[in-house]
Length: 488
Picture 1: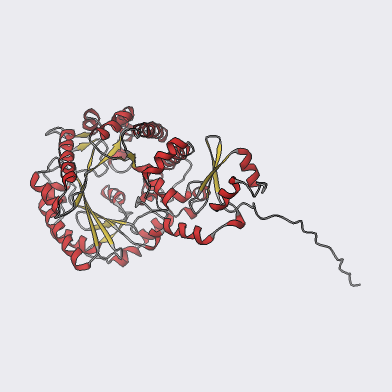
Picture 2: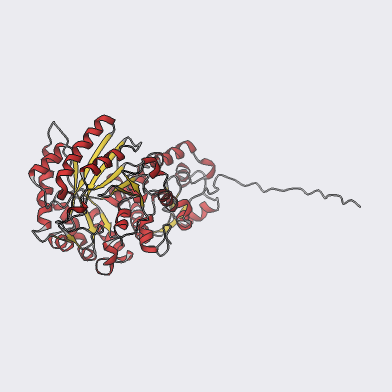
């Protein structure tokens, strides 16, 4: 006997979609809820406001509702043209290619820095110098990248120990620039101990930007960066002053760049936060890059002596950044990690910090060229290679093409493992739109390219830095200073 279907009246309750929450993430900061969406927009809500927002009870005619709607936090009020344009701007690097090319001119070095990641070789042993043949091949390989702007950064060891090859390579690279009509940026990282007026003039005439390490006042710098023949600090300050005096005068023939300094924080540095910042101000430096040590290469071996916990670094960073903000009342000095994050937050601009991209810059954003022409995903990957583990080696300038490097399993593995969409905890993290992971760090510290984020010290470090910055952005006075740092 057939069964008669019973008619059921579907009574659908009318739901107002004006406040339905779109996909986004949140984190509690300073007693408020910080909302961040994939477009990189953020808003702070008090707990009561947050509850109303979640339950679609915010009054439409309110400043809070309008602000949320403007920034893509109200589902049916999203301006997708505007929002997608911002996302495209922030992620424009995805449509680019390797722009940074790091040439290791030699592994020799005349310093014995406590944290040296590159395991420097004795200055008398020249078998780790890059030959001119290899340097030329490396430059030619770099220009195979489709990127219209090529940055070649000369590193070591101490690159000035291989001056003749360095000099010829700079001249050759400028020639290739003219032939290809690409924009070439040249940079040198040096400890300045072998700098002379003749070398300095050549570098300035060829528009090479200069960067040297400055770890703080004399007692801190020389403790970190030992140089037996003289005071490393004195040599650094002497040439910083020389280059910056030339920069201030300029000339009509060529641009002279202001020399920059690079800070590496060791365990010894932690007690001198204010003094380190003051040292940078003292010498007219406008930026300070407060960088943590990474347990890679030599530093990993001596981590108990020179390293520290993520919590210790975060405390150091917080105090230093607050000191910098106080100094901004009289003198502008900016912190580079904050600048890079703020540039993403307020300008939807990728600042070129390849370790904080998604995916990271391994091969697709940078390539490291060892002294013998071997190619690596990045300079940190090259350092792993120096220990005998070639997991991050992608090829050789004499044997492989640019295309084969991009298609290599090594490159693909790094791209996949640094894609935050495939990192469960990263995907749910509020700071996902601004952050990135480092497969080399993960591999060295956790024996996995993917890593395990909860106990990962790098994750803890950046979580602490993000928290610090967004806590300050919630304060009008501090926020005004931070916004000014990245105003276009």
